[in-house]
Length: 574
Image (tube, rainbow, N blue to C red; front, side, top):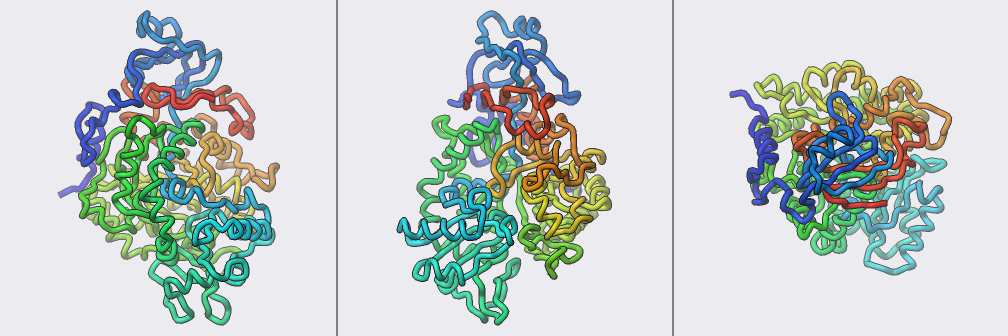
């Protein structure tokens, strides 16, 4: 028997036709929802870029009952729309399909987004970060001291938080600080004692306990396997997932709408609360209060998905389960991404969170069950293991091309790996802000001047004909699609504005736009309903004050978002 994802493709097509899907029990067409506009709206006298196959340009767009009716010139669109249509004058503004964020972390933004941000974009020095922790302590709110976004590699000089600093600041309560990558945590002695981590503790599978030279734990925990027990011991965190998560998620949706983003693809659904997180996602849309769609990838590290009967395609056009997420290694800037050779300044090759043999069996099992896969791979050795696993399934009578298996972050990519991705029909998904914010440390500390040229190879995969996408990995880097377009086109460095990293990997504005609209919809198995402004598709769109093709690349991120529309209804107006 040949395994493919034909059944899932049929389900996605059924969403357009209005068939019922999965456990949600809703009409997948949102035409009757509170988020959907009834009647006809015509946008005139602008620049309409539907991001169709030819990247055509028009002056007008008509939307009827939440879906795209037509694009064309003003006269033809008006004639088709009819005399009762609502008219919106664009006055030269630019209309694009709503942006799709194909990789972010809803639980971290909604569940932990309330924590103090002590990252380098707000706290420029190690001392500033420590002072912020003292301020949290002095406010005396909560039983724990918690913060997020700490990133030592962007500090001068790079320096980890250890129990020595944290015990001095907070000797009597647990401390938990999450690294910006989400792959490392920093805790004090109270937190270590709470879960029994001592000098004699063995590293957990897929994680490591940082240690001082004498072997005692230093409070730096590498990999979720090393720190999740501590995080989930915090009742405030678990309570927030139960009580305030829905409203916090709606706030994330509003933030997305203000940035022109109409679809958020969560790449670790269930990471904090398991399959019941899907119930919270569904609840966000009740009463028409959620301003962005959700595509959910079930996090493989959480049990219970099969027992709960969750399947890809469950849901509707607003919230749907899209695939299965496996994290194979860590973070390159945290020196835990798994490499073929040691890091430039560290005698380590990183960590396999999932050993290659185990990954092969996990990939084969999931695709045979019909699950599209999203496979986190930062280091080149981790990407090798992913390619080996997908090829292993391909060689066992599985039509892997139909699954559009994604490599998330896909940071360091060699030519031989690109050729293998072509053969297997895979999707490179780049954390493009690595180039801008971390490019200088990737060059000087992580990879060295030669290997760093292989970072986020957008133009190379474009030349290879791959449908590539790019993402923010928020909160690792901030949400913001125009910023991603800017980085892909300019590839300039945050700390060195006049330096271009791997200039041969710069792409055109059109290619960058395609990656966050049409390509991203395809990668999220939603291309039949979103991703372009073609007749019959859902009317998700963003209106920009200026044309990103006609400004300096470094100015693209500064273009104001004028309006964002979801299902033909305006959900943001600047």
